[in-house]
Image (tube, rainbow over all chains, first blue to last red; front, side, top):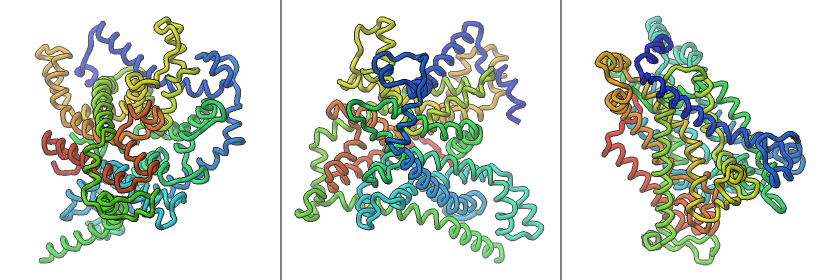
Length: 288
Length: 301
């Protein structure tokens, strides 16, 4: 539907004349350069030797080397933070999806009093500052001997992952037409049947998108991971990279290589699922 | 009768399905919030266990009121929030208007802007730190090459220049999100309005001011509220880029609180700071929702 309207949109919306178009195009190109340059430079620099990087940095190096990537996995053991991040983000995401799907189904499809306050409450929780619960979580985890453990990260991660999952999932389930479920009800299907046989298959793409979003938020989280881990054994990727230290100078080559490794999967996911992620992000946030 | 009992069982089912998620949120987010407040009424120095944990009423809050480092941290946070959000709204609006048009490479633009949003903030901060480094930083090299600078500049040595990479990095990372929220708002505007205006001979600027911006106001306000609350809890970005330095001249409240808690292990005082941040955030949200009438989500409204 929207596709069909596009030609019109161009005709009506902000049609610029000759000069306007050039200014507009130029500004857009500059913005794209601004957006892409840091990535280009990080990737290129991660393949440069330290000597060249610090003495004579150039945007277009002739010799590319893999030393930093090699060091990352031999001298640094960057595999451990990656494993930690995968375990923590993966477990949190799976748990939130399981529990969150039930809640989102109820909020999107069942009529009951208290829905509006629940949605408001969930939204409020997604917005409150993480730092305001660091102190009790630290004391709680310390008394349970969970500092520097996987559960000691997964539990705090629920604080932002659970409301996020429920919020996004509710928004996207609401956009799935009800017709099929209603038809099934008329045919005598129970709620359980219409949920498991009809809605769930239809909602699988939404579940995947929400899962990706939740996973990205967990993968990127820094404050809790910094607060509730003690050493390299349980540090997640962002903490490990932020605390990289060299013997004499900042090991930029390795930091950038690590940044590329940590970012590449997320960037790839975003590029592949771009359209769906944008829908998921904005479904709950803005309505016409 | 049957209708009402059916509704009753529907309501029970609804609550039963929502309960686990709400329970998790209450247990790990709301209950700790209350605990933070309780903690803030005590003297609790983990470094000095022999002091015990005496109840001291509001003494921590009195200390905050007299703490110059807190007030300057609050100032830094407000400064950062206002400057970065203004830039993000302006650039984001431009990007949203751009992505709403048809042009060659639009798919590419949409995908490209999403990547900075998706990468860890820590990585974004490191990329910009690397660009602004005095030794081997590409920005200095370029500025010297072009002749704008005579010699490499040390950006992180004073607050006035250290803010440049901080704000630039935030704008770089967050503008895509702003643009996407605004774009979603733009796509809800009825196109016939523009057609009617065009028939009446209204130019693009008039259309922007009298159609697009007024109708986009709800989306702009929602974006504003999200970004203000985000700005007030800024932590990762500044932790990595400046560490709050030089000295504490770029330290935001979240970083000050983190230091009070986990560097100095002052749990009573740190908790009081946490409560203050929470109260400010809450107050801001309330101001937006009540004062400006922002409507957030939900199917009603």
